[in-house]
Image 1 (cartoon, rainbow, N blue to C red):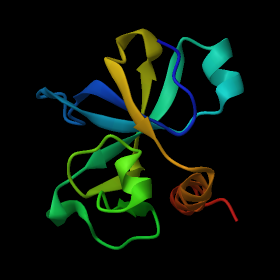
Image 2: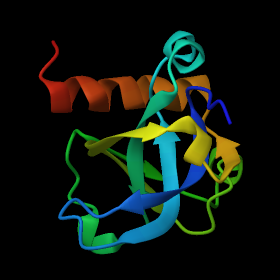
Image 3: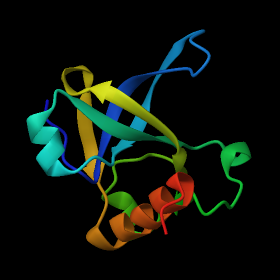
Image 4: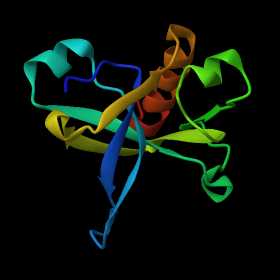
Length: 119
């Protein structure tokens, strides 16, 4: 499945310490051009854990009670953690759940710049 930038997808996300995996949502942050050219895509982890929300400039809060939040397909208020990126084989994406608006993707761009140190 070829992901599109801004899609919220469901993936079997590995733990960073390689002790296990968990099916969870993630955001496709790689450009559509590179999603077409490569088998892999870059994803940002999405979590509903309140403990992971630290108010950092690398995080974007999704409120599912808003019309924007409802377009994501998420079931709970969530945080997109741009500080938690992974390269993932597109063929392993389980399904597309929803997407973010262009306005929210601009916020994501700011989060990515913050985590990568890009002015």
